[in-house]
Amino acid sequence: MADSQVVDLNVGGRHLTTSLSTLTKYPDSMLATMFSGRHPVAKDKDGRYFIDVDGDVFVHILNFLRFGKMPPPERASQVNEYAEYFGLEELRAPVLEDFEQVLYGIWKKKLPGYQGLLDCVKIDLKRRNIFTDSCLRVCPVCGRKAAMGFRIGR
Image 1: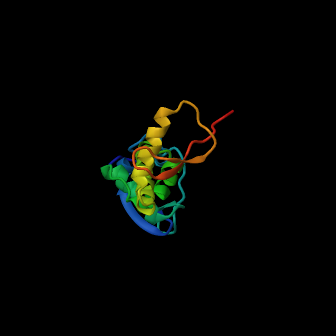
Image 2 (image 1 turned 90 degrees about the vertical axis):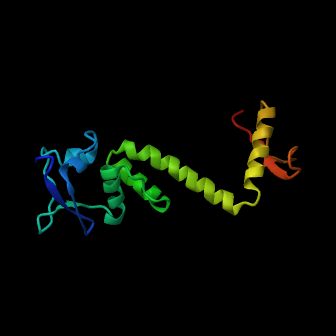
Image 3 (image 1 turned 60 degrees about the vertical axis):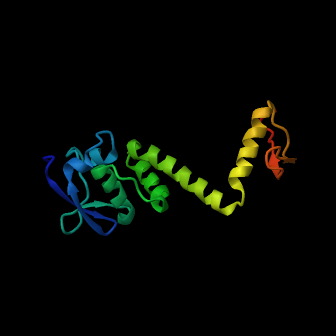
């Protein structure tokens, strides 16, 4: 297959079109291997290459391959699974970092005073060398009570 060749895909019933160079952008990925010409790839009745995954998630894989575009936060977890499956390490690491930021944002919104409590924990941990059983402590900065200290190992 020539790199400029247009490739029609049927991805979980969603019809997508891309170029061979997009699919083979990362030579160590499963997509590059699938479309290297060395292995047969299933086709649907209309001659489109069939990939048995959710097309609505896979489109984010294609957008990353085309433009380096990261998926929206609500799709990060699913795209991360696909990135792992297709061997796209270049996409996996940034998605995990974005996903961690999304989780941080969720916790921050759900817990009143989250940042203040986190700062208190950080201050308390810096002062201690050994973690103890969990207990309530008063934060020296803000005066709030927070569960601090955990036994790690023995």
